[in-house]
Length: 367
Image (tube, rainbow, N blue to C red):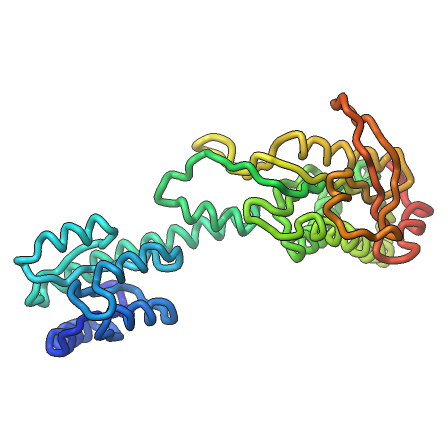
């Protein structure tokens, strides 16, 4: 036995439904019943079901329509569906298997065959569930949860190494002076401080709907608007950048209270435009990436914060996506960034907390 399961028995024939339910209960499973296809769909939508025993000929919605409904819903994709059909209706069984049914039982159902079909289907489902939990447990620590979900969706398709074009806002951030601070200090302290900083900034990015693409030492690359579309991605990125400066103030307070150095400054670059978003790498190692000129320009803008008196710089492409707020956005000028021929209109985004940037400039060091 594979343990107790919740089994949906969908059959419009009350006698057949009762007999099949009793057989399932004798196998130690809990039974939920539906007399119509529409009722079966409603149950699948609102209740956790481990396996479905599905009749074909039902009123309102037939078994094919229920099967189509279940296989189009990502939440139900792994729920085994066993078609229950008369022997003379073999064509219907073949059609159901082609539509995604996992197995079939012939009427009248024999307990020995029911036992085998239930155990086989439930074992496959639980193995797949175990694999999914293992993938999520391992990869969710290193890649964005949205990317893990995408990986799990493609688990049976060998995870193709593809991508798609998206219009997004890319963020690069960097902690100024951290390398110099870290050199004379013990490794365990350096890792503790770095994890504290990255944890605080990652929480801000994720809370604003961003995707954490990678950690670059004490730097972070994030994308707003990929791999999942995000309305107002530029607004979200700008709000995240401001909140990150506020979080930096708390991080610096933590350093001061422990007497272990700092305070630090931060540089953030934002740029909006098209990227190729997707999974890249090899069959043995995969990473999520968002590549293109938009990404490169965001990185250059972050580096430019070392040379100007502003902590958050954004390109004109991002400025045009933000609401008019002349007190919050200050023009810096037209700048030719390294690696680019055409100049970029650059703006500074003022921090959310008055005086925060000035206090960082007065106390912090540039790297």
